[in-house]
Length: 258
Image (cartoon, rainbow, N blue to C red):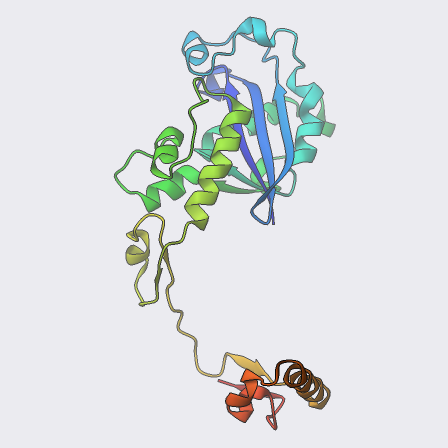
């Protein structure tokens, strides 16, 4: 599974007030492993940056004055994220700005307009995930770093690529931490109330006859027996010998339902 952990910085809060993106940072994960592939780009927003925004991310008008405009980087950026699941903290904000930037190209550069991001990418909002895991607690990126013991001491100001890299660590900690298994059945509320860092496993009820067990055919059984003989000759014993014959794959029908 290909995921892109992404963050943006902007000139202000609302696209309806004409605010634009000024930085994009993204890191690639495949099957929950960081690949080392990243995308990082500063953008000339073609407007002034609000003073409040500069106080948050530290990016000034002078810093982005000579950077490319979004139209010049749109194709490369789209190639990087297309078809992936986007992992974003407070996804509606960032996705809203990405959609806004592409929509501005619709009239002048229709070849660069792909349509809404959600039509082409999955979107996973880690803020919503954190609120479900930790209801009633602070779930900012800084708070999650503290909760999951992730070092973000180098994060003085917000920066899109740095925040994306930190968010990748937070996401992996939120979704991969496991210290205990709870096998008791429970409803969704029980699952949401699980202790942070623990994985709750909820048993699923299956209607009778829906689970099909595939048994080995004759060739597969013979190959299995030959393998056991090889183990016996090398080790002097085989633990399979202590199992009932049906678990050794002997004399059973090809298929049955439970």
